[in-house]
Length: 142
Length: 190
Image (tube, rainbow over all chains, first blue to last red; front, side, top):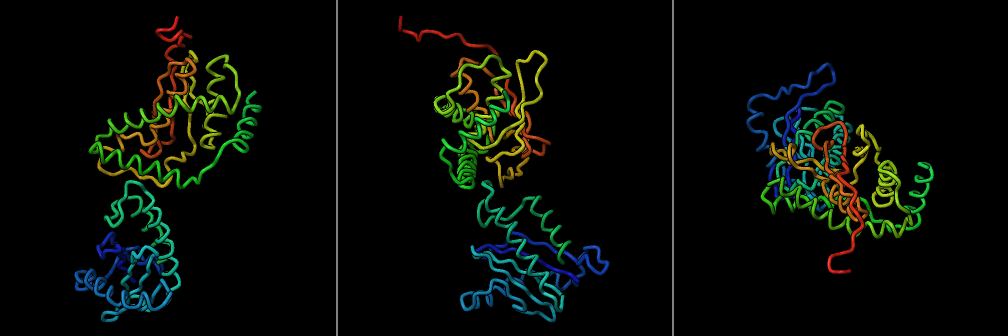
């Protein structure tokens, strides 16, 4: 199983992206998305934003599973209180609970990043510490 | 002696000082430093300098409040001073007690090791290659100490020598006594 994870700021600009494979079932963390998907992943994720914006004021849930799908690839989304979006594109078919946990912890990391005085809201997140911690979480949950 | 000091520090911290939310404090200090970096165009030497000056101005006033709250008398030697700075000074203003360590052989300089630094929570230095070498993020503390010492007739050199933000193992402030100033009549008063 492979995942493409991206954080999108509240002005719809991308802040962070990561392509990672599963560590469970003897996976070693390398993503196996086909080349066509790899090239399109940013477009797929961004096009799902429209749906997210439609539903975000209709219900109270911040985590949405099956937000959109693209030829069998599913999109999960998580909306932070500051209207930043965490989007995951995956070839996973079911079991969304660990994904939800993953996104909740990512939210915590994201808030810590926001508290850093040298980080400006909606700028790309370049901190290597953040990247390492996201990878650790991915290892744990995905 | 050292236990008494600790007790005194605890008491004062609990009963006499007004407290403020630590995140508010941390974030306020953070935005000051970030703004200074911007204003000085990321020239970190100048930022350090400015923080030190700000601290110095705080220090020369803060010592009065410190003495008023603690009612302490003169220290006998620098060892005393170090204990009081760590167990009472840092305790009542920041609620931390740095460890006094690394005494020089002649007992004229010592290190204060900050196991936690409330100024630097959440902080990651900008990764422009310069910040992690030059910027002393909490340099204001050095200024405060310098100002305080100067007002009690101790002319000291105070500076950071390592900081966990830069990837060092510990955060350490080095205090070096240069000389003891004499009590002098201010100029123009005979």
